[in-house]
Amino acid sequence: MKGKLISLHCEERKNSWKLHENEEEERMRTLALVLQVVESVKKDKKTHVKTQNIENYKR
Image (cartoon, rainbow, N blue to C red):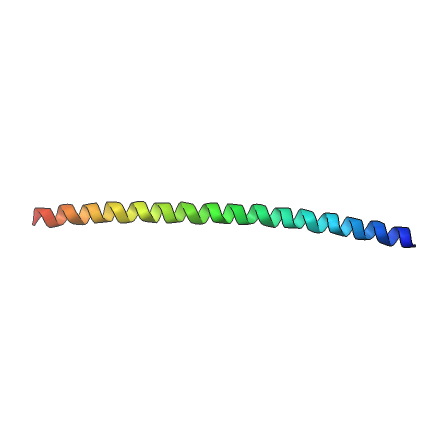
């Protein structure tokens, strides 16, 4: 019985380690997405500012 418990415990730890690995991957993906959004917002702001400057210049 003791051997079974130990092997179950090892299996559990291995599974939880896999879970943590997946969580880490998920975090990395989320972070990458957030960074992409931030970059695109920055670009939008820059083009928006340029457009505003051109419009102000036309006036």
